[in-house]
Length: 133
Picture (cartoon, one colour):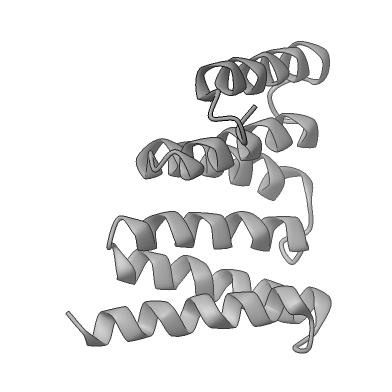
């Protein structure tokens, strides 16, 4: 649906998925976190970065309550939050989140993992943007 620019339908599907997961699993289950993350990615792709951050933070809140603090899924959400703040030109907050992601990826997956590399690039981009302010 997203590929065909049917955003209203896609949003309804993501919201329906969240509603089902909340009903079936409850609001603090990793399945609910997945739906919040999906909604975050939806809003991110439609350039509604503030709403994306709101959804990512809901996802992060759940994950941090049910997983180890160095789980790669938590790092992924931090990186998503960082990239959304980057798009809002809030580079300091973006850097903070991207550095958290980098640390978690390094600890959980190692320095040579592609996800660690991606977070390193985001850290670099944030620092570079801060230099230009």
